[in-house]
Length: 226
Image (cartoon, rainbow, N blue to C red):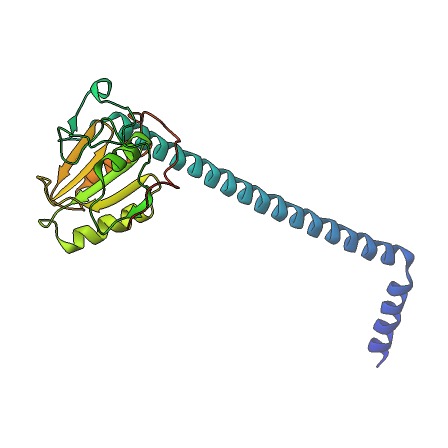
C-alpha cells in the first residue's frame, strides 16, 4: 500500500509540474505539425498526379485530333483508285431549260437546269431528272446511284450513309453500267459493294471537295420529288 500511495503522489506531482505540462504540450504541437506536413505532402503529391494525368490526357487528345486531321488531309490528297476524271474546264455550266445530252451516265457535269435537286442527305426512290441532279453536283454534292444489280443490303447501307451526309443524294439509275456508282463534279467511281473502302474515301474527298465549282451553294429549297 505504501508503494502504491507513493506512486500516486509521484504521478500527481508530475502532472502538477509546469515543466512536465509544457513538455507534453510541446510534444502535441510537434505531432500536430508533423501531421500537417504529412497532409500537405499527400495533398501536393495527389495534386501533382492529377495535373500530370490531365496534362497527359490533354496531350493525348491533341495528338489524336492531329492524327485524324492528318489522315483526312492525306485522304483528300490521295487519288481514289479506279475513279474516272473529266476536265472540269470542258464541262459546260450554263443554265438551260431544254434537254441536255450528256456523254456519261450518270452525268458528272455539263449544262444543267437552273433548279438543283435537293441534296441535303436526300434519298430518292425514283429516278431523277439528270439536268437537275447535275446542278446539285455543281454545288459540291456526291450523287450515289444504283441499278438492279445492286444488293438490297448495299442499297440500304448506302442510303444510311447518304441520310447522315449533307451535300449528298441517292437515286436509282436503271441504265447505268455499274451496280453502284458515285458521282461528283468531273469525278465518278464504280463499285460492286457498299463496304468497298473507296466509298468512304470518295465521300471524304468530294463532298464539298476541291472539285466543287460553287462551294457552299444551297442543297435545299430545290427540286424535291421523292
